[in-house]
Length: 141
Image (tube, rainbow, N blue to C red):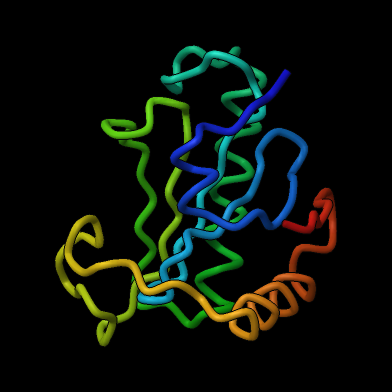
């Protein structure tokens, strides 16, 4: 049964599910920072997914990055899987703008996380509802 790593649970807000991945929003209003987590047990590396899941993972990642680039008018999209702190397989999809808090440096550890307000989260969810219309299920929480 799929269980989200406790650190991801603590640091993110659940948006919903693609066919393979859970979509999370990092609770850091410094950047529109999303995380995709394949709903598979005991996976810490991309190559541990079977070929079909690898293909689905990349499809979901690239589709999300493309949607977010347009939705948030990104100057650059940062897409990465590191797993040095959270070993559960996950992909960061981060909208970068030249005027964001860390530009041009990586976002990790640059500034303390600034939690979203309830209103900010509602606005992001509504914006996502306009573009995530196929093969996506919104979840609350």
